[in-house]
Amino acid sequence: MECQNSQPSRPSAHSGAPRGLGPWLHLLTGPRRCAYGAPETATAAALGLHLPCGPCLDKSPDPTAVPHFPQDSTVDCQTDMAFLHAAAGLLILCAVSSAQRLRGDNSPLCTPSDEFGKYCPTTCGVADYLHKYKPSMDRDLDDMEYMLTEVFNLTRDTQDKVVYMRDSEAQTKKTITSDVYIKKSSSMLDDILRFERSIVEQEAQIYDLDHMLSANEKRMLQLRQLALQLEQKCKKPCEDTVQIQPTTGKDCQDIANKGARTSGLYFVKPMKATEQFLVYCEIDSAGSGWTVLQRRRDGSLDFSKNWIQYKEGFGYLSPDDLSEFWLGNEKMHLLSTQSSIPYVLRIELTDWEGNKKNADYAMFKVGPEADMYRLTYAYYFGGDAGDAFDGYDFGDDPSDKFYTSHNGMQFSTADRDNDKYQGNCAKQDGSGWWMNRCHAAHLNGKYYKGGRYTEKDAGEHGFDNGIIWAAWHSRWYSMKETTMKMIPINRMHIGGGQQAGVKQFGGLGDM
Image (tube, rainbow, N blue to C red; front, side):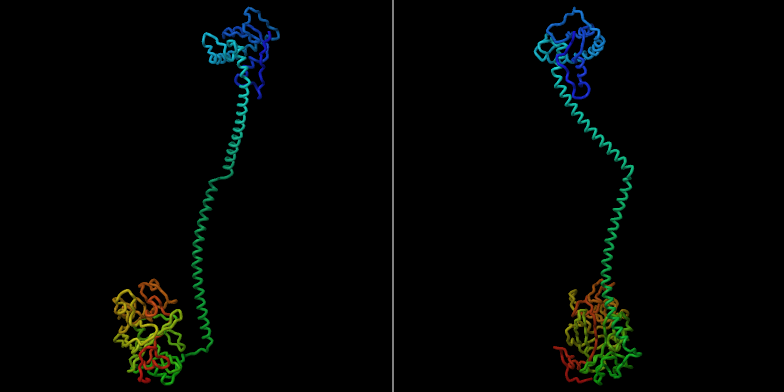
């Protein structure tokens, strides 16, 4: 007899048989021919089930009926039955187990109250049950398969990218040696840092060179000016001898009294001198003759000399009065002590701003060598530079003024210490002068261009060793030009020589 399932199976949306139970359901439910026979009956009997063919009925087939086996279906039925027995065994075990859980078939009674209908679970009942839920299960399985396919595709793309990245990394390692380039980069960074430090150092050097260049340009300008002056002098006819004026006398005022009206070099012979000597005389149109004792012009002459040099004098006397010199302590002594008419010592000062001031001291004298050429004067005669010879209160000590005065001081040099200081002022300052402890005025000091200097500039000892006149500028300011000159006191009121507000001496007459 023909066995036709009531619901045909739905072909899967994907290739192949349905997953899971699909192949087994296909054996049970697909359109086929079968025949009752001993294998199926034996299997059903072994399982304790009746396997009716066709629509499931409420009665079992007649066990005594003789089965009919068509000839053309014998082989097919035998083959199919072999698969059927295996599939049915597994499927029925699962189905029975599930059905028993659903229905409670482990009890002696069968309660037909669920999806199986009014029948107890037979093979056809299980098949109907499975057919009922198979479409939704297939749909869910198809959806799961679709999602798994998507996941697989995405995973495969990711795997492809990972493989590509691995291949790229391997290829990169083969073609590029990263360590070499890292080392090269580090070396380049080191070079950059080294070049940067070098640039900073070179900028500092350039800055210093700029300052040096500016200083050199100023110096070159000064040298050009000096060269022009020398060139002008060289254009004049050369003279084998220095022009010395023919008039002579006891001093420059005596020469002026004899009619000389030209400033220049003259021979003088003081009363106590054994021989005449050369001096520079400043003679004005009114007939006042100043005997010049000292000149500081440009720092071209070093005043760091010993006792003998200060005694005899040093430097150069020139007709144009452009040179620096010290006339000599012995000559100063002979000139200042030769007459009963006292002399006035005038100090002329010029600072680096071009300002000029002076200070006068009456009854100026320089003692003999036996008294170490002691300086004396009667009083400050006047002037606008202030009285530095009387000392100066620097504010360091109440005794500053007393110990920096110069009246009555003996002359000191580095090799002849006659000052009041426990050390040697002349040696510390580098020049000779009438030192006390040490000075408020020092016209033989070190020449500092520009005027201002510091303790560091002063050298080893760090004392104020410039050309100082503390009554006008501070001890750390060095004068640009100085002059020491003398004239008889009775000539101070003639030719504008008299200073306002100072004492006057009348009736002394000309020398």
